[in-house]
Length: 353
Image 1 (tube, one colour):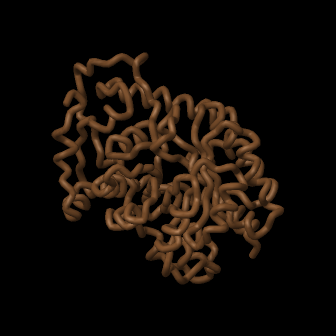
Image 2 (cartoon, helix red, strand yellow):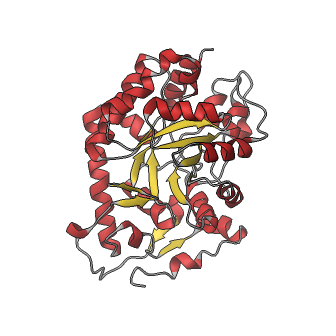
Image 3 (cartoon, one colour):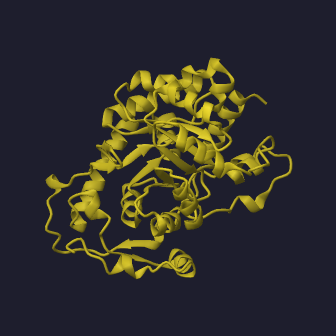
């Protein structure tokens, strides 16, 4: 099967399999503040990510490219929506364009439509230094995602089976390119051990890509003759993964992604320790089913709602939101306790200091 055909299959299966809503955010509850000392018109959702300044804590995460005319249109529309709100946007894996130059236009369209935007490139952990440089040059990327997708590859009929030297290759790319490297999971979450390893080789940020959003094991199982059902429920829920990453981050940027569909999901993710949150499947669904104007309207609504939630909590900016007290319960509390992560530090903190 061609990469182009597989790319389009992934999009269709992502829409048909949907998102599980098992990211763990139902276990996270804010402590209500009756006297918040805030005003809605003072709520500021600008974020600082390393040396980058963004007008929103939401970014459009990598979805597609390399699937011909249809994915060209999707990336064009995503870039238009991102530009309308000043969001960062990531493309899908660029490996298909590196292997077939005819697919390059489905990625370059993002920079063409959003020349001043913060655009993030994307390659798998099998990529070489030369491929990383080519991917960056292709779209004039401001940063590059290197995605980890072991379970997806194992489930994919034609997927990779050898994952040795991935960390070494990531380190070589970090040392050889002139943009920040973000290492991203694709729906199975990151443990604190993984984050520690990535931090040790100098990555600028991790995108936890937790369980609970688009399920790529389920998607690949739809393409297999004999399913591997044990991988359908495999992974670390997004809420857990953000907390695990924050436990060992030591200043490394954390992107919270995986099943974030609402403004409340987004604010909970940030309060748990994410510096920004990515949305993919939710955004793609609106774009394909309702169109670009509906997507832009929804993104505006998400911004307004995040500001409302911040105001109710007494947070006037994203840094203060990350200090809002919250209660962790259920499976998320059990998981974090078993992993020796003290949940009381979340419940006992205060925006007021």
